Image (cartoon, rainbow, N blue to C red; front, side, top):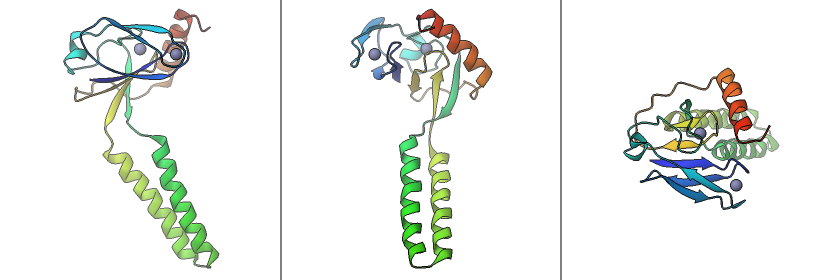
Length: 154
Ligand SMILES: [Zn+2]
Ligand SMILES: [Zn+2]
């Protein structure tokens, strides 16, 4: 399983492989040492049951979507439609915008789900079974506050 651990201090994303732990990684940005401990399920890529970073057991599921990709698609569409508009071809311009939106939807649809820790926002990618529910704002509010108090951010 691939894990993107979030540095508790500076929020940098640190990619790690779930392996035989516990071990400690060092943040490349702020040089904080971050102890990680992986459960058996994490190591064998079966399930995300406990966060190796904050030891929390609450996760949500979201699409593994790179926002930059979506922005790029829309930007390309906008440029093409601007060129068409310049030549007075309104219909084509609208068509291109619509096409960009459709491409966006398709890309979004084929993406895999990934699991995210509510507390520390670490991300989990792998072939494990997705059991987490969708994002819940109230849960996020409660758990993020709890975590930030614990690590002394608030
Ligand atoms: Zn850091
Ligand atoms: Zn966590």
